[in-house]
Image 1 (cartoon, rainbow, N blue to C red):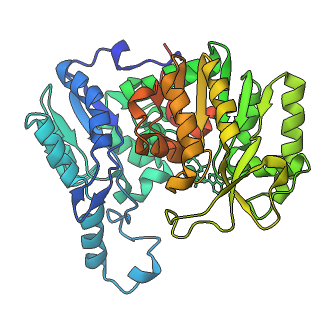
Image 2 (image 1 turned 90 degrees about the vertical axis):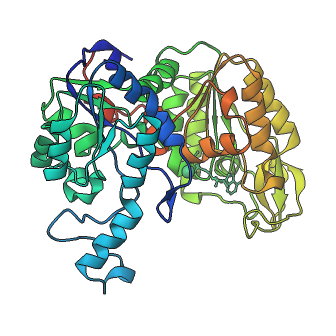
Length: 423
Ligand code: ADP
Ligand code: MG
């Protein structure tokens, strides 16, 4: 894609405000998964080496807006709490202080933490920041203005910004102050992508714009309704469209098959018919499961032991529900992947959270792991499945954005990308 990246601009001596994704899972003030911190490091280290003054900003969790006079959207269980209690609770759960401490360890003691976002602490930390050093601002969402993309808030943030760098793909589909506003309002000299967003645009954008063919898309997951835009957009581009997951049952219904008690969106059956017709008209090879793993009930809890059968897809018994693709389908789909040069995958093939129902998803993940084709994984649960099943390092690219990657696959323009300068 023709967006400028940090490699295209001179950052020496400049204040670079970098929107990173440091929204790491935490338990009792302890970081439980450092993946996002590690993901942000290449961009941060590069900017430090180039002699930039690196000002990092991120959100973390779903905090109250404790930096505003009035705290809004208080949950029922917190209604009786005083302001002081709400502030303490929010700081305990959502302060970026523990992340700053960890970053400081990883970056040779060069990181200063500001205890506010645009206030005195931030101003002092930025003023003291030397070339090659880093400041991490406190959680952006402690201000309600962040998600409102408030212009004055953008202006205050822009005091810390000669060059705006967006490297948080997970929030790139939102037009917030830190994800788009600063650049949208023209408050910086340059607006460029960091390495993470750069790779998303190169690999995913490249596949959508100029795919090496055959181009195969595999779509699964729970609902057709979540993925209509993705299916529609990909039908314009792919040679083969593979459907799995619960989404398949709405297509079964459209073909006149019974679906038993499977998850099925009756109000989307007509749409499924249209999508089948569109595939035909476009000459896209649409593959649906030929056999289906069924059980009497949905597993509860989700990883409970479960008795299953495999039936042809056009004969799901009335009292059974489909929960995974069958053995023949796995072979069919693996063969389609083998002959592909580009594969995009979103949505598990079955209820992969259950070991007995993960085999369809494993088979597809394996096929992707074994091919030399470009392999791209989009979507939160799909990325989680690939990681959980141990195939992560075998893929060309696992998108760092769940919702954002879906919007990207829909062909929508993401505000956090649109706001960046063109090359
Ligand atoms: P993503 O987040 O990657 O876009 P989705 O959220 O659309 O994926 O779908 C993931 C969920 O779909 C998983 O929790 C999985 O259990 C569920 N799922 C897949 N197949 C079935 C099925 N046959 N019946 C019910 N749920 C299913
Ligand atoms: Mg999901």
